[in-house]
Each structure stands twice: as C-alpha cells, then as structure tokens.
Image (cartoon, rainbow, N blue to C red; front, side, top):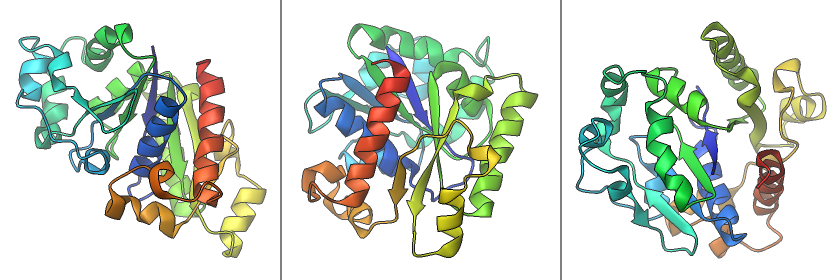
Length: 248
C-alpha cells in the first residue's frame, strides 16, 4: 500500500479539494483507496457526506479499539473514508504520549494494506507532532501552492522544517493550485518556477468556480463537471503524475 499526504503550512490553498478529487480519480481507476480526513475542520468529510464513527481517537491510539472501526463507506466504488473527528484538534497532545511519537500513524495505517492499494491523508495546516507522523508515514507529500510569494514562503518553511527535524525532504512534492493566469505574477511564477518548486509536479490546477461548487454539490468534480473542464483535466494530469511517482 502507498500513502499520499496532502499538506501545506498555509491554509486556503485547495488542499482538501485536491485530496477529494485525487481520491475519486484513484478509485475510478480501479485503485482501492482510503481517504483519511485528519483535519478537524472536516472539509473532505463534508464533500463525501461522512460522519465520524462512535469510537474515539484516543481509544484507537491507545490500542484498545481497532482503527478499522473508524472506516465508513463513501458513495463511490473503491473509495472508503475515515471522517474527521473534532477531537483531532487534540491529536498533537495524544501523539506525545505514544512511543515512538513519530511512528504512531504509520502503525495505524499498516493493517489497511490488506484492503487498500492507496491511502490519502488530508492534513491540517500545521507543523507539529501530527505533521511529523504524516511525513514519516507518507511515501509522497503533495503540497498545493498558490503562485504567490506568501504561499511559496510557507512551502520554504516546510522544507526548512523537514531538514531541521531530519525528516525526508524529498518526499515533499509541490504543485501549483488555484492559479489564475490572468494575473501577471501567477503567470511569471508558473512559467519560471523558483528553486523552492524544484521536484514539483507539472500539473497546474487553475482557480475555478467549478472547484468551488464542490461544496454545493458535496461531490468530487468528476461527478458533475464537464469532462473538458480545465480544473478537472488538471487534477487528472496530477493524478497520473502521482500514480507514476508512487508506482501504482
């Protein structure tokens, strides 16, 4: 089983939209997929109509409850969901009590390899014990970046953090998100990517009202958007790049 995380220190960059669309595209390409919404805001769970299980995260981390009990079916074939739980806001505190603290998430994911080929983690925008677990467990950490200097600075902060904490910086693979080529700065940064975007994926997800409608439709784009929609095509390109990188 491969693990893909969607993470960025900066919020509002299209992270959950990417996680949901990539999960759907993977499942529709016959890759049994589990999406784990680790963000207590629960955007990915909302898109998939997911409600958290009755079991509490604390009991799962302590080992008294099997993690599989958190899994809920999605409305789509080959795609299951672990919905966000509002107690996830305490995950950092809980993880501090697990030894070794950086490997708790990887241990929780291990049993899923019998059923799924891919796990996608929708991650909160933070650098924390949870982030350490995510970077330890993931094979690739895809980072959506808006083509602005502030968003690029956040990416650079994550890269610096990974090096300082002796985590694997090569797992971090950025891609441009919410790009608006009508803006000169966006065009310049897309056409001449700065060094911080090295090893980035080539797909550029445009700013799109069709992406915003995911909240209205509570569904991945491929369910309702025209097949020629530029954002949908960009997500499809991104999925093919990630699939190749993960060797799925």
